[in-house]
Length: 280
Image (cartoon, rainbow, N blue to C red; front, side):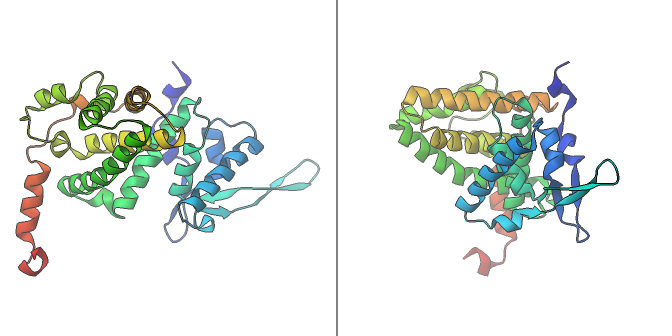
């Protein structure tokens, strides 16, 4: 059994705390141990990078990294004050994004915090939404991030529509264990004109959203150049997401059920329910 086999999504849920007002947070010292950093000074450098990323994303550091110094007992009735932080979910997300990529638990943390953070960004009561509403929310997020991904791919050297189709296919092949867009279409029983993303449940959409956002960020962060390198990056990120899903004990995306309704059908039904003044 690998070390990673000991971990699951509950690894991060177990160390989650709540304030008296019901606001969730994580202690940095506890997260440090889970992410397998033995030295606080090494983990603190990751926190510093996360704070910088927080500033760069136009967020207030104080809102996400709250000082929580603690006094601990020492031998002979002495005591010592140690530094700690109360971290928001977004702060944890930034920390794992800046963590040691060689640690597999970091990849697990990236999946957990990224997906949960995206859900939280979409809507505060995401978990209480019905499945159709979850699909609509993530699909809209997917549209926005695919535009950003296309821009990052173009900057890397993916220029023509044909080249971008190959690039997208590589991402699907990584995430779906070798299946490309054509094979996924066949597996879902879709027509050529139907978009794959419109025929995914919320879980499958979330996996693809994570694939897209992480590829986007990696292309930009690593300044990947050349269409072949961009294609390989997309494939590797898709494969990494797939591996993490497996480690979490999740269902592989190609084995998830295809919803009976497409996103377009749900949107039409939603429009019919709106008052005329809202539709106009």
